[in-house]
Image (cartoon, rainbow, N blue to C red; front, side):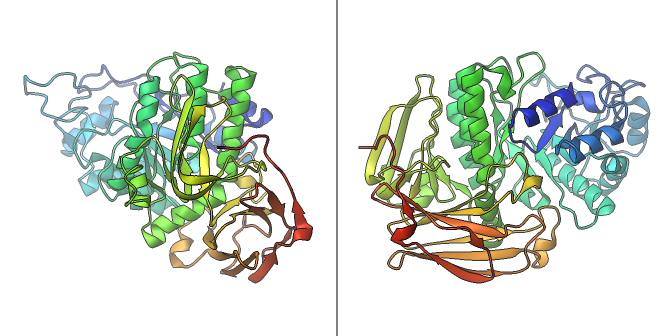
Length: 508
């Protein structure tokens, strides 16, 4: 089933880089009903023979042939009787269960896995846990999905410290990555991303996700996403499609579902919806150079990537309280989150160009303005301000296929603009010591010229060529020839290079 599903992503040209598996990858039974003694046959640190009969060979095939990396779910507890007896003899177990609290308090109920939770604040526990996981990296597991760690406030933090230790011991210099359901401030420095919890498959829950993620970012967890499609029950075509679209512009895009419902794979939801979902995934991958540069800006300049309108426009009372729209870097996005397909975008003062990643050009909207009405299923409302630069990759099926061609440096004219484009090897922490290429793009509106200077060596998947696309207030798009991305150069956009691509409609 796993190989068939991954192969369908590739044969159907639905871009993706990784898949995550639940309990069934490492153990042979769900442990929710287990007592504090566990069961003798339950596996804590193995593989399920039915799912992964030959794990190293399977995972190598998935990564080397299909270009999919695998992440496995982990729980902060033990289920195997022998492991529990050993941990108990060492004093490594917490008394409480999940979720956290005192299980002896008659006012509390609903706890599970009481007496089986590891105390990751103990360095000995972290060392032992890391040692028990080292073979997984040899077998080809790439990252971790940490669930159900709301046992105490710092559980997820210390758990992540242990997982970072696994990586540093086995593959020094490689980045550690895990995905956690909750956080304590500062965990991003450990290579941890987050999701907003078990999301129900409803329009109300979808509409709430942007506000949740913005609050998470403000609270110190900027790498955040949501359960695309909803988790706790069956979804439907329109809701799933709109959720795909919303996730394009969030720091993490991760599709999720349960085994008891129709999986949220695009090809299972009809031709129209699957085409829109494919387009959403393609746009996500085109935005990799843009998003990756903003990730570096968070690291190097402490500037939020996904940020609320009030941060970007603190003096504009019309947008200050809005959470259905946000800034994805310099892009203002307001995905459709209602069953009636209504869109509503509140644009601050300035000139705003519709952005969907296509070559389509439209006359921009002059703000302040409200763009509203009914949105077709394929429509994903987003806008780029005049005086902005958006670098875009060609459409690729996975990041290992980058660069895949020339970088499109998209300029939205009307004002001077700049953008710092950052590339690194995508695998190691060499960037901490300067192992990266930084290209500073600058657009001069008066001379209609894009210039750049680059420092540092190009990484293995770095771009070698670029071309410029200029969008202007007249509703036109001008493109340059493809040129080499050298250490220093420029492209002047002259009338001879112009070709008009007017849209079929304009915002009014």
